[in-house]
Image 1: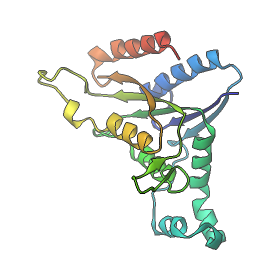
Image 2: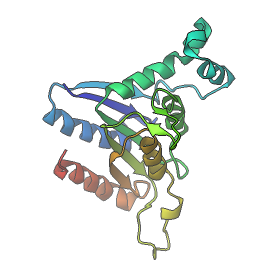
Image 3: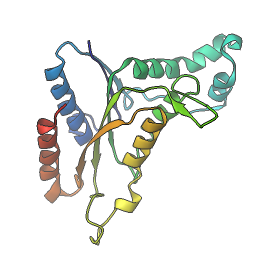
Amino acid sequence: MKNILVIEVSPRGPESISRQISASILAKLKTKYPDAVVVTEDLALHPLPHLDQAFIAAMSTPHDRRNDDHRATLAQSQLAVEHLKSAETIIISFPVFNFSIPSALKAWVDHIVRPGLTFRPTPQGPEGLLKDKKVYLASASGQVYLSPPTSPTDFMPIDFSISYMKYVLGYLGITDVTVFRAEGVGRPQLKASSLETVMNAIETDFF
């Protein structure tokens, strides 16, 4: 049985382009895996807290010395890690805010990059512990970041969202990442065609 984890971030609800993309990806996956178990974490509705001193102290305390307060502080993080570890396929859906990922997604990253749980230090450097997983990034951006370098509106050098997410996932051992991205959705003349292009790509992609 396939376990699918969906991470949603956009606060725009059904109007969100990134959510429409992730819904299309999920529908395609459920066609292939009709018995799949789907867990959705909606970070717009239920955001994880940004890290504070209490979290750092709890995480830094050895397991056998953690008290009830430590465990309560880490509870949401532990659940996010367990969802990630249990999933074979992960859909991470997000808009691009100010050239990068929304803060709610960054908070999720901070909760799931956990030494001993999702990666471990070795003499050769950190080793990711979440191998053999497939990730789909469903992204929407108001600007066009993948325009040719000669374009006067070339935003490619300041696109930090996809490269950041790929690096974080690779750090955890996840290297099988497919990106479905609608660009220029902030431009009325490009929005419809951009969404149509990415939806067609999902339909024709071999999942």
